[in-house]
Length: 120
Image 1 (spheres, rainbow, N blue to C red):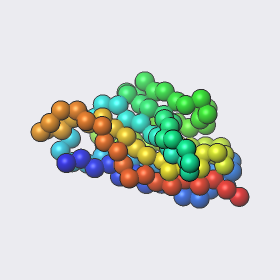
Image 2: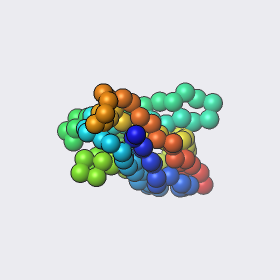
Image 3: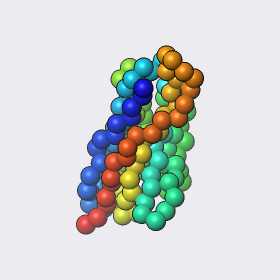
Image 4: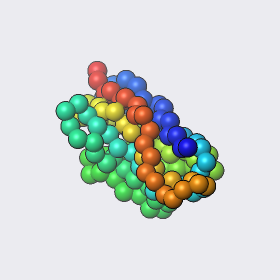
C-alpha cells in the first residue's frame, strides 16, 4: 500500500511564500512522474507543476516564475516552493505520483490535499 501525505499549507498574505511537501511511503519500488495539482472552490482540479526528473519540469502558465517544483528521491519527497503568492492561488493543493510497487504495476496515487489560503 502506498500513501502520499502533504504538509506545509496555511494562511499567507499576498506576496508571501509557502513551501509544500509531499512524502510517499509504502512498498515503493520506483517513483516516476510527480506533480502538484490544485482545486479552488467551484473550479476543476488543475495541474500546477510536474517533475519527471530533476531536469524535466513543466509549469502552468499562471505559476511560471513564481513556483518551483523539486524532488528528493532519497527521501521519496516532493516539494513546491511558492513565492509571490496571489489571492488566486488560494486552493486545496494535491500531490500526485506515478508509483510502481514491489507487488504491482505502476499506478497513480493522490494525497489528501493541503489548504493554501492567500488573503490579507
